[in-house]
Image 1 (cartoon, rainbow, N blue to C red):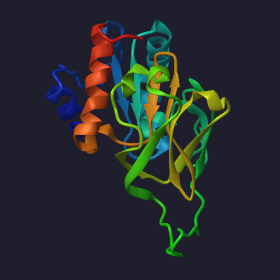
Image 2: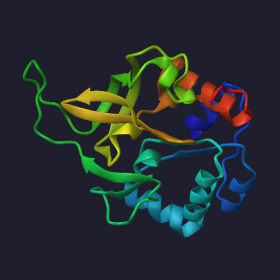
Image 3: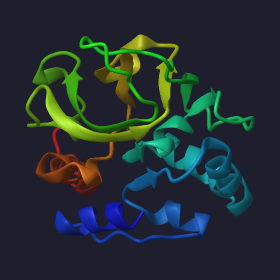
Image 4: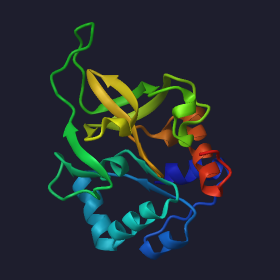
Length: 206
């Protein structure tokens, strides 16, 4: 969370880290970072009263960016836990298969951790504005053991390869989620937050 806040400040935002769900009503945009496991995140969201407020915010049409486990809890369910997700994206979250090997025969460890190439679906004119002006096949930083599988494959807007296809980003209208961590991805990751800030301020072309 500190890294996300720092990244947002670096691109000129004035983020408010809050435990008060009523703050979402006056926000221009919201970032939902995920820390820990699916059930722990959903338990915190439910207990603090954020689940319904996040859904209301998503319905408002304002920009909502969800990162890592924040992306995963957008879905209906996860193999990682028992609690239902927010259900803002139809689909499920599955464990990355274990026991895979790469083309050299080396074991591919789970969690998927480190830099990986991200391929955006379609040409730049078709991309969500959050990914504007980011070179195709740029490298972003990942740390995760589970992968998102949307029911509607058209909502997958970026992929990565880790033995199986990884859904690197999804988008449904104003709701965007990344499996990778922009705040840990150097200048290219900061560009994601810069684009998000433009959306929040209403200056981006949608």
